[in-house]
Length: 240
Image (cartoon, rainbow, N blue to C red; front, side, top):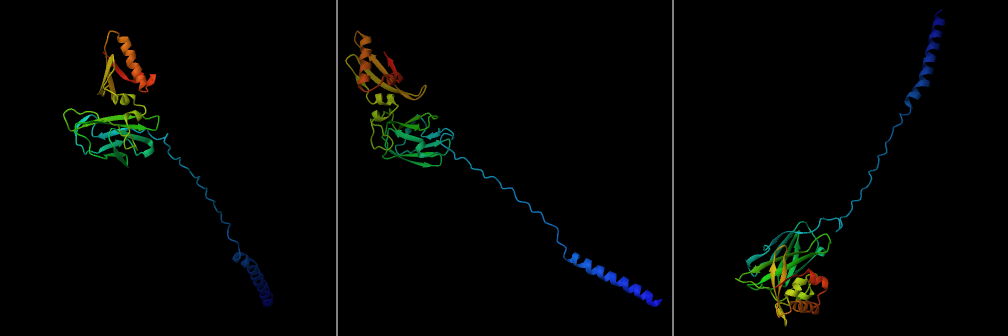
């Protein structure tokens, strides 16, 4: 009886041993769970458009020193022009009734007269823009003296001496350099005004008995100077 019990126990033990041998390697060598990998979504590149001259804000003068129309300015005074934004040299041209050199610092143009300015003289300068969206601007100031006069020459950008006649688009400035003038039946003088905008105007005094002929002689004289009909019409001419 004891032998039978021992035999049964031995069989049970053997079965347990075989079961453990069969199951244990599977547990030890069980493959780990498959890991999921996430591929990051690439960030699309963005190309920023480079600003062009056309897309930039129109250039204009914010402040200028000396002030427009200022009197008794020292003869060694630099002109300091501040614009509404930073700019490049090819966005504008500077021309004036005095010889000068220019430099740019941020949004400021510094104009330094090459020689001391003359006393008792009114000086004019122009800032013209290359962009059609900007309108050219004119400023003037007068140096120390009781009755300032205009100088005889106009200093264009990049030239030591440029007469008024070489300044394109300013027929009033051109004509001011040829007046006062007296013909056989007319005489012409000029003056400068700031209203409605800064420009030279001309007073034509007609003489003789035939004022129509005198006026025509005056117009013929303008034509002889090289004025076109459109330029003549743009002038502020006041007959008397």
